[in-house]
Image (cartoon, rainbow, N blue to C red; front, top):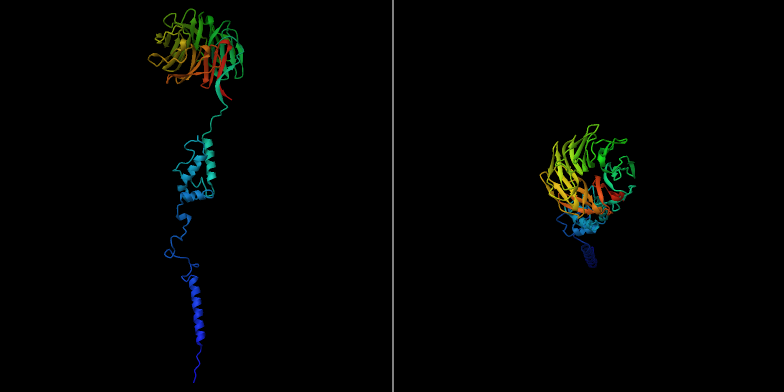
Length: 428
């Protein structure tokens, strides 16, 4: 009897072939399995395939250069500074201060640079800061001596003021001129003779001295004459209070210094020892007449009064001395012929270096480190006594300059022959 099987051999062979083909397709499509939604563990993932996050790594310089134009990560600031500095140095002006651009150790704080800032933004900010810190002075402002219109053509022999818009000058004919900040005008012409010097302490206490013992006094409202009891020509005048003044003689008799004091200006003669020694210019530092007073003589002499007694000092020069100025004790400087300058240091007078061959007739300054002298041929020099150094200034004139006074180092008046008055100032 013939028994029938459930499947024929051909069917079995076909089924095996189908299975083999299916298994082959499965292997070729990645039979090791897929990550799917569960991901891989550290053991399953290789280093080459791992992608670290920004928070877990520090970018290299190349990465910063590539990415800086888009975003600068806060976490990469420490490494990015060098590149930012390099860019900033290129865009920052050469004259920028060292503290304008961040250095290699500077970290750009989150408050200063956000993730949205680009290199260009940072460079622009540095340029703005640089401009603020190194703004140059206005090139249009020029400091120099300028000629003023005095309204007269005779020698102006002295100048003094309370401010740069309240300045007085005196002339050889006895005129008193006033500058109000705009123009010069003659405010008094009653002296009747030449006036040689002017000084004061305020706009209501001004004294002008001249020939034949003339003293004119301004009390804030009018000018009047103070009787001095002398016919000597007075040239030097100094005061630090409204009720007294010292005046030195330039010629005539008696020679020396007169001292006028109290509200009625009682004047008395002070022998400047030796007799006949004049005091062409005077400088002093006194309180109610007590202190030190210096006067210079045309023969190179210097006299000093420390209280009631006058003594002659060894000036160290035989040149004529015409002007003297005291800064603070002990520094006093006198000037004279042939560019002579002598300095008193508290113990003795010493010649200073010669900075001009021309005679110097007056001196004024704010300190021993900054004083000015004027003289023949329009000479003006500015000196630092501590350094024993002077520079010549362009006065713009060759006229003789007799006097100088200033309100500050940048606000000075000088006066001289042919009615010339100069003003040193800074303006556009």
